[in-house]
Image 1: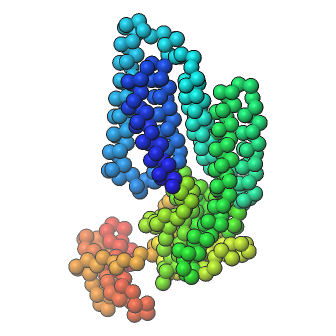
Image 2 (image 1 turned 60 degrees about the vertical axis):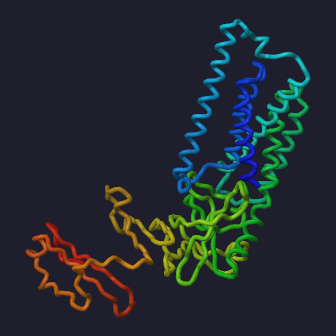
Image 3 (image 1 turned 90 degrees about the horizontal axis):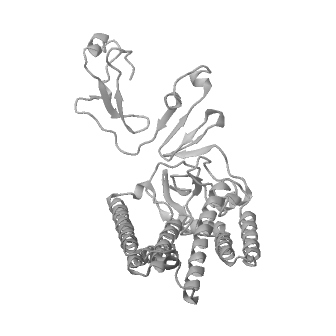
Length: 392
């Protein structure tokens, strides 16, 4: 539904923009301006395109729109230049005749512009109020307040101002009312997608695992700037996987493949745990393991890795960049690459056999094999070169 409405706005933009240079002057600039508003509404409805979807097709589409816009602007400039040369360009010609049809067109254009402002205001409030836990109460408060403002402004004596701002607040109220059902939509949809498996919800904006139902509200939901806002992680077999991300505009979950999102601790019937406020904090499922890390270590946990940082590890006077001061544990389910010249794990040389002279000469030592205790394939790269200490 949302995508169809956005496509309708884009189609309207192309039709109006293409027709504008051929219309009478008083309609030309009005239709051209309305086409820009239609395109803006389409972008606001569709939302920003995630970087993972900005492929060659996206780039070509942007280029086509840019060239089309340049062509329309050039045609309008030529049209105005010709009219000026013929001395047919005046204020009265641009304003147009005082007819009811023109008045209706202007009122409609102002109402559409107000809808665009309302969508812009909705987006602004959604980002400004994100991270709170007020949830449904916040959504309904905004809906009631916006509806009241729209009604009051409608009675202003200046009808043009009344139309544009009433439409803006009416759009905000409508968005808030529709969004007030988001919490139930999320929980109901997740239970269906999880199908009895353990699951949890996490955000990409740095707040990590959700701990309260109120955080799932339309305006309360934590939001990132260039990342997915809400992610569904499902505990599948021996590892936690990202299953889908929530689209606020489409009000549904969209399948995801990106693993670069914060992880959480999946449990069965997570909805009831969330409603009771008994979510266990600072617990992260990484790979096939579950880690409990105190916040004093500033953990950063993803589905495939976890890292920590603390003055206990690097000292209080450390001047190194934070990225160099973090200790990271990476879980990679793929089989490790084994060089052809690797020594079998069963034939690992003793420290006496690995001489400093040999390593300094440039010979590398790689040892690979299956660990007896864990049954995992391991590859050990021994340090070599000028700073040899014979560690593997």
